[in-house]
Length: 221
Ligand code: C5P
Image 1: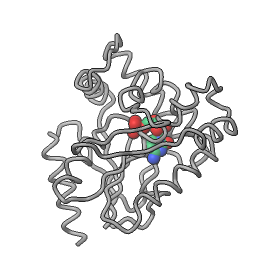
Image 2: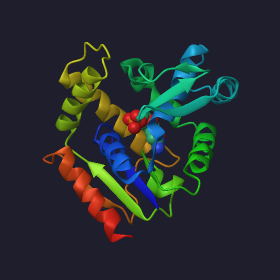
Image 3: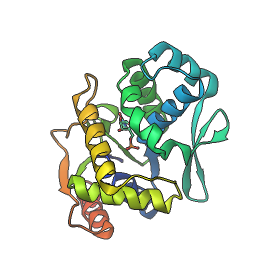
Image 4: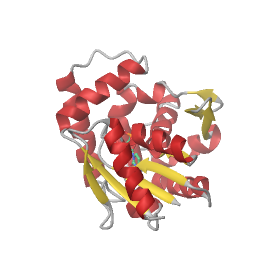
């Protein structure tokens, strides 16, 4: 069984996907973390965020690994835990430029398909239902108002212990800019798959969203 969860920034995708993965013993794959890791690599190598060939070479040198440690997903670059670093405002501000590079996407999509393999998987991102797992049995497209997504993002940063001086207004502007770039890039832009079910989570609790997705999974079994 493959479950694809797509949607704009901070719509709650990873929060609910993690809970569902735990409940159903599915493998959880956070594809945004992989593009964020590519961005950390570009920064560490002092590369321009548009330098496709340079970043590809650096990814091959460093390697990106997603590891599950005590039920938490960790991201490693060149053997170093960068799970916190990938969430900093600097990386968030530049990830859309890196993720729009065609060859970087090609590499990540191939890795994501390999990771999904033949196991039960729930994967979250922007192009999972449209490109990475087009045959997924369940496709969910999560949306929420820009304001509530900004508020959630602020809370998430606090909970992860990531220092940020940004106000909720500034975060709202940043995520709107990122969504614009992600929706307007040439290759696999953020877009609801024709067969995806859209859920507006603005006025829903996490539990309610989890229940709604579980109901869809049950229906398709
Ligand atoms: O999900 P998250 O907000 O961590 O994703 C960070 C960025 O990675 C997105 O803004 C987007 O540019 C990119 N991304 C993507 N395709 C995916 C997942 C994330 O382009 N499947």
